[in-house]
Length: 200
Image 1 (cartoon, one colour):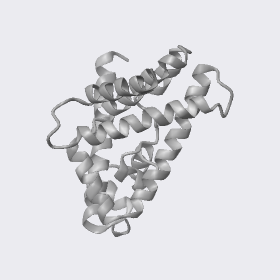
Image 2: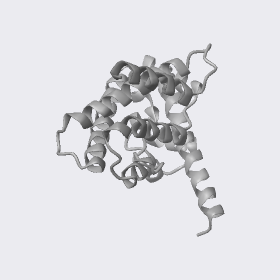
Image 3: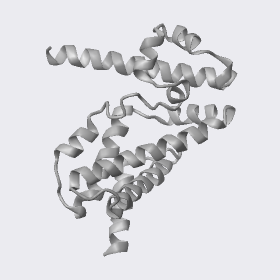
């Protein structure tokens, strides 16, 4: 298959995923999670039930935007393929992993606004988001252990993942403030520089 066909297919997949996310959020804001069925969501977007579940494991995941294939960007695969570069490079590499996922997801301020409206309407989504974030963190810890050849449960892997996650969360909050004009990578780089000063 040529590159053009692949990019067309990828673009269509991204459009379908976005359509499902947007419809799931809108319906949740209007009716709550229990106020619409999976079939109604599929009808809104013009896809089959099977197609929905190829993209998202549940209505909740569609609202939040958590795909079935958590590495559809290929970022984790590339992270592993780089091989061990040593603990000193780990923070930079984890931030690069997060940014690759972020870029692939195409998250905008409008997306965050709609997601927060959906969570206001359906507070149990917040608990689901925390659960999924915890699962994602555990997956990333395993990735670090595999890549760096660390034993299972090595606290350095967990500390690196949690530090990168904390930096990303704080940077994202700053990025989505109306007065912010810097892009996300620049904001994160400033925070990483501050961390390096702390530990210098």
